[in-house]
Image (cartoon, helix red, strand yellow):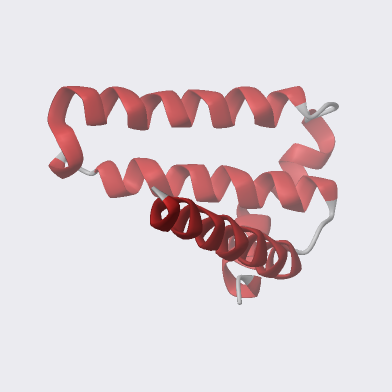
Length: 99
């Protein structure tokens, strides 16, 4: 599902990250910065902010680089995450029905 995307990111940054990154804090900091950029752009320009989709995709790229660094399979992680997402949305819908 995400194999090609993860491999593309791996070709670009895996070796550099393996040599230069020693703790997860590098990726956590980078993800935090990327999320902040999206939030700032949304607050300033709204959902149609210039290239906001690229800023959101940056979060995906950093996440894939982090998974590569951890040597984890993005596809399997994504499948598990989708199941969690589906359960959360079902609970949300059920709560709304009760109101």
